Amino acid sequence: MSTILLTGFEPFDGADRNPSGEAVTEVARTYRGPHQLVTATLPVAFARAAERLRALIDEHTPDAVVATGLAAGSDRIAVERVGVNLMDARIPDNDGRQPADEASEPGGPAARFATLPVKRIARALDDHGLPARLSLSAGSYVCNHVLYTALSAVRGDARAGFVHLPWSSSCAPEGAAHLPDEDLARAVGVVIDHVFEPEESHPGGSVW
Ligand code: PCA
Image (cartoon, rainbow, N blue to C red; front, top):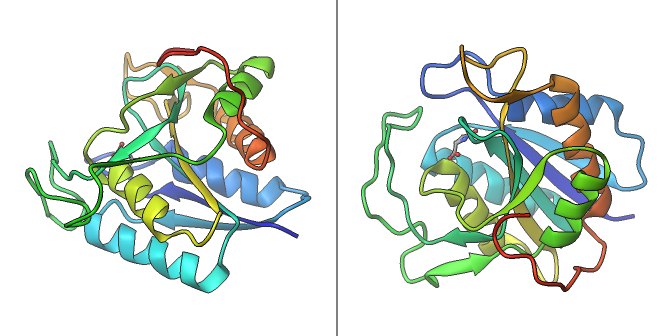
């Protein structure tokens, strides 16, 4: 049986909820296989998030890592294609740390491509009526750091990638784009159902 490590994040930036952690908790509650699912809610703190992720990978040796986070302002589910070796924070993390122009991993490659079948996943989301797009940047905050770290930490041919979620309807700030809570949980479920499928090769560009 394959093991998937699925993560979301705690709240940050003064919010009291984070839809990614909530969607992951909901999937953990309802998932019925066929894979073994290990779930975690990561702190929105550069050092501790990476440390926790590496510890989870050491402990469970997952065959795939699917990390999720909130992209406030987005109205679509964004399947990230690349993590960059950069920490450049617009706001302090939950430990008060605000790196500027620092490497995620000193000496590491400038970028690492996600190894999930990103086009296959974006299409699957679309097939399920969920608004999806491919994204060429996960930013330079804690989500990107987690994606870059996951791609560095997985063993052998294990896959890793990141999916950014919009706000959920129940916690979106006034005027912010959002999707129904159940759609976000459903989207995370669709993603994990397709992580081991072959990638689709067709022209796609950055927008689905
Ligand atoms: N989103 C932030 C960090 C945690 C989260 O849910 C980001 O996009 O980096």
